[in-house]
Amino acid sequence: MSGPSLHRVVDETGVVIGEHDLTDDELVDLFRAMVAARAYDTKASAMQRQGRLATYAPFTGQEAAQIGSAAALQNTDWMVATYRDAAAMWYHGYPWLNLMLGRTGDERGGQAPAGVNVLPPSITVGGHMIHAVGISWASKIRHEPSVAITYFGDGATSEGDFHEAMNFAGVYRTPTVFLCQNNGWAISLPFDRQTAAATIAQKADGYGMGGVRVDGNDVIAVHQVTRRAVAAARRGDGPTLIEAVTYRVGPHTTADDDSRYRSAEDVDDWRRRDPISRMRAVLQAGDLWSQQWEDEIATTEAAAVEAAVGEAEATPPLSAEGIFDAMFSTLPAHLEAQRAMAQRRAGDS
Image (cartoon, rainbow, N blue to C red; front, side, top):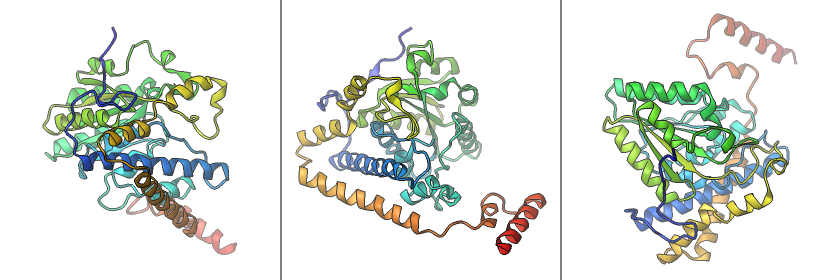
């Protein structure tokens, strides 16, 4: 069984080969957002090597899969993502500052601003998908029009949580969009050893939902299929599984040596399919791009990232007792005792 065909609007050289209805302003916005996302990823990777961040999971090469899908959401929709999905989270309103704080180990980075329907990034592989289904089920019970989208990699589809989330969503027809960024590798495990199925998208058949396979480096195509899936969920037609075929150009994390399990030639081949370069070609063909304009937006977006870094590093450290303040509205007695102990020890020091 070969599974669904790969949906594509723009080929690998940047030539538009399919239909779309995005305006020039929307195309420009998608490009600008991908440039911003790469500025963040480049900065965070450099900061980790300088010892200024904890282990970091880069996402260069996956900007189209994240930005294209996030752009299909409404502000009232929910996003439940992973440690590699900073671009999607940021586009849906989660500030660079919070993402930076979280990477420095400051728990305050996990507190989304009011009105931003984004959960903190999940480190546990696969477990967060269940949260997305719960959120969307609650929306259905309350007759609210919001949809929940959850992001995960191909490796997470081997977790039991993936089965439980997909099965529940299928049975209860929750307004959930499952977006798998199939980036070819689950740390060092290649996709062809991850599953016996030809595609991730065809797994949707077993759960009674629609499955779509899309070129994850084609931001227009990703936006198109996600918008359709979100619309279907919103009108009560149930969940959709989207497989965005992309590639993890960098290592799994900054603690990983990817040269031990894959060839430089393979990585270079995928670099030539870069999603930003592809979208740049689309804009050029429509007289919407110039080098000066791109340089200006790259400078502007990099400055925004630098400002977030400066603010994060200037934020006073969280007090020892402050770690107890972000979970419960009323602290349980055993944690209240621990908080008092932390206060006493802080006073003694």
